[in-house]
Image (cartoon, rainbow, N blue to C red; front, side, top):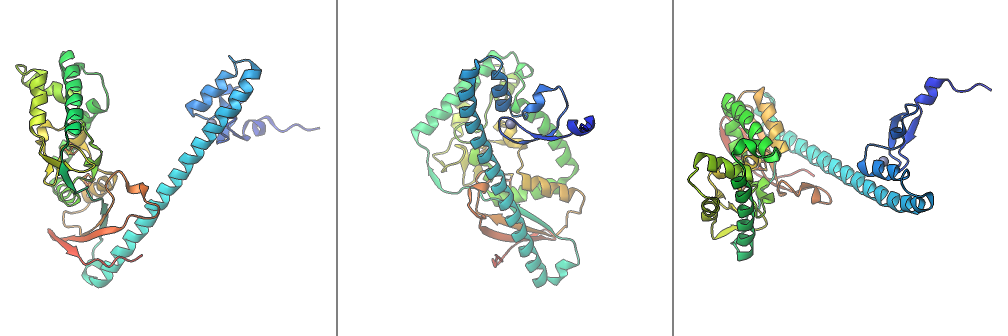
Length: 325
Ligand code: SF4
Ligand code: SF4
Ligand SMILES: [Zn+2]
């Protein structure tokens, strides 16, 4: 009987022994090819080497079920995200097409469409628990900052990396001032949809504090904590960052974290890229939806349109809403 050629055996498509995800072609002799890259799958598969078979078997069955359930949940979530993105994109296009039909002069030019979220807006009195939580956070990061010799000695984390990105971004926006102006304009319309995740920390980290200590070494950690607390307002936006108010962030830009100063949502970043290659006069339809930046995919269907604007020849015009389904 003829055996399959070796290269055919090698290239058989296989599935992870734990979670059943399809794997790439098998390379003979490599044990790790039996499971996917998921660290839980790899760990569970390795445990067969150290556990007695009669103990491993029920353990494998139980853990395998948990992993498969988790993966199914993740897959369902990813499919939901794609579906919302597609439906919103299609609706945005229908809105843009309807706009061009009613304003034929727009059709002569290429037109850009950008979608933005809406920041939360309800102001409520700041309660003592929130202030206490913010104070504890500030004291913790101030103590870490005091323990460091200087900003350069703080271990690299997302806050340290944000500084690098901020420098690059500032250089980029200085080179493209129309991109900066448009970004400011859209963030003002949005009213801080991304600040909904600032909670009681405002992303203030040890590096934010250490830089101030490096610039003003006479200050104590407690004085810096009091400086931040001094910017709190009596009221802030319900469900958002403790520093967010109906007039924007209560902190001056230089006291904010680099994470805050560097952040642009994905939709705005795509718009910036489109603007970079086009003139500042590119007519733009702005579709503002009711979600904030972090709950976009919590909707079962699609996020309703809140407002539609046209930016043309430097003018921002709010358009009557007649959203096609
Ligand atoms: S970056 Fe995006 S979410 Fe944040 S304020 Fe600007 S438009 Fe809104
Ligand atoms: S500190 Fe200011 S910019 Fe940062 S999340 Fe809070 S309100 Fe937004
Ligand atoms: Zn797996």
